[in-house]
Amino acid sequence: MGIKLAIVDNGQAAIDYLDEPTVDLIFMDGQMPHLDHFETTAHLRARGLSAAIIALKVYALEEKEQQCLSAGTSAFLSKPFLQSELKAVLARWLDAGVIVQTGTSDIVIRSQIKR
Image (cartoon, rainbow, N blue to C red; front, side, top):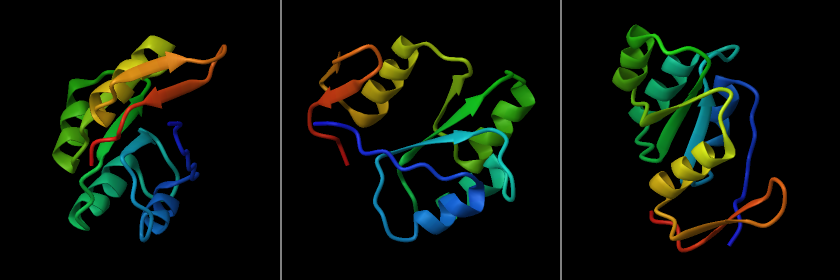
C-alpha cells in the first residue's frame, strides 16, 4: 500500500480541498498565506475533521506550540526533519505496521490505515 498525496498551497485551499475528500493525516506548515496554521486548523476541527494534523515548524516557541495545540494540532515535526522522524510520525498517526524504504526517498506503508 502506498501513500496518496495531495498538496495545497495555503490554508483556504486546504479547507476547500477538504470539503469532500477523506484524509488520514495532514501535514500543515506553520506559516501559510491567506489563513495561518491556527485559523486553518481551528476551522477544520470546527467542521468535525478528526484526522491528525501535524504542524511543520521551524522554531520551537512554547507559546506557539500551545497556540497550535489549542487550535487542534495533534503533534509537531520540526523542519528540517530526518526521514526517520517522518517515518515515526507516519507510523504513529497512521497506525502502520511496517514502513519500508523502497528507494532513496520512497516510503511505502504496508498495513491497513486505521480510520
